[in-house]
Picture (tube, rainbow, N blue to C red):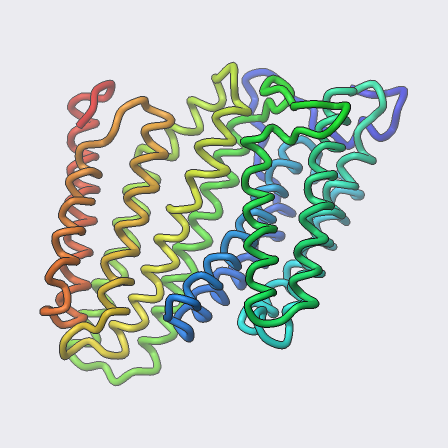
Length: 395
């Protein structure tokens, strides 16, 4: 690809009809984010207030953004090469600092969180720019655009880390908003202007597999935490039922996402002439609510396991109903992006969850969890049966 320039050799060699596989070093890198997801769910559990929800949402958006940007870069660069592997190992170090700072990011370790996040975003993008040979002008321009935007947001992150209280919160809100609008603004910078969609072509199968892997991370974290929590409890009938409901709920979420949706998304983006546009919408943005729903459900599972009886309080109702609800909203939008129609099964599931939330406080946490799990199972079975009967039509 670039025999006259060694830096060009850092890019993947794309072979037609041979999707790039996810490498072992990428999976190794992802392990850091298992810990990050655990930290996010535990932090939300410990500060389940309106302010705490805003703070944890900001932290989740930061974790997702640094991971998905890395997925984009490793879609272009070849992780089998030593320089790219070293980059990912350094990113793992930054990710561990980021993850360990999450519980006290708005207290004593805010600056650590900000430095880790800014270093990962700016450092990885600078490496990508260095690895791009001079003759690949559109790619170099994209790297410069993104580096410019991330450098500006890095100032906001560091300023927030140095500040305290509400000032930190507002600096970080500004940083997150700035970064999340940047793809929609096509990373406009003076002189270079807007980036083109054509310049953002990705190897679709690899991108789909990477994002599906993050779904596995979130679901796996929930299962592991539920198992650890259950092991520490007395095994009463209520606790056993709560554990089974949580496990079946995770299985239903896996089925809803992976049985048809993940495969369809991978096939479509692999064949799309506008893979960059689809990757930005379906994977960069629309996977956020899917993962957020899984994390919120994990919070609910822990609450229900520890307190299965009595009336459900507000945070139990919000997490137990809200987690599957946000998950289904994300999946219906994701599948609309890849199939072009809204899944009726998902829409009915959303309506049922909204109705359940209306009187959820009257149920015990256990029965509320069983009800939401039953709704997810209905959605999974409905979609599977309908798509088998009418593979090209809405269910």
